[in-house]
Length: 387
Image (cartoon, rainbow, N blue to C red):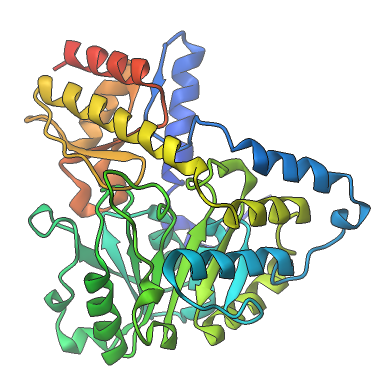
């Protein structure tokens, strides 16, 4: 049988981390001992009080039925409560909050709900690959926003001409940033909201790392900007904030019309998340968040250990104020892909090449803080042998 898949798949590369995982498995099968600092999957446990709520809800027969398409009311109210307490932002849980099966699917489905064939989407470069892949699958065109170190990995919106903005329908931001760890203040968000509103561009902020911050920094919400809800949405996730990556629970908040459009797409494609997971997530969001303080201290200490070690072996890296990643320059003489390949195959250390996140990621690599300190030290020791 001659099977023909969709033409759009011919230009879609395999998902980066699936490809890396395949190579890791092949190396492990041949006896390689790998230290994996490539994927940001927290090693620290989900707080006990969240797990306890999940177990309680599993015993309730009504929780094994379909959730409402928007997510259960308790979860949506918990998101609204979180925004009120954390950011002093009022949200209507019925129209301005929608449950997601993790923010990854929410981002992808949001692009599908907003973009027509040929529309342009402004995407930070480097950034989370899903923004690009979803745009491609939706038939849109990527317009890169370079993130450069001299601007602390913040885009210069004015680099694009006013004429070019006429084709742009949607723009993404992501702070604290993946992969760079860059952070911004509320003034930056205020400028972004004004800039894109004046050009009739929908603005989506991915705030997946808003609860992973260090050294006194508190990540703002873009919805704190006056008038932001006119044409702005914000994605949130419990994956990194509460060490719940496998639970697949997140949310989108903001403009009610945009959220309703996404709800229409999702109601035709999925049936929301398992109710006990939503209710356990509600318990997480309505907690006093004190459980996160020790966790963030651990990440901060790990960052100090890793950065000190990298600098000792001649690798330039700065400490972020947020996220669980270190963004470092590759040593002289390497490309980002070449360096990552040598580290995995020869040193047994898995890092992610910066170019995988976009053209402007060339010259960098990303390391995750999701392993204990002694393994970070061991990773640096192994790397030193091959530098």
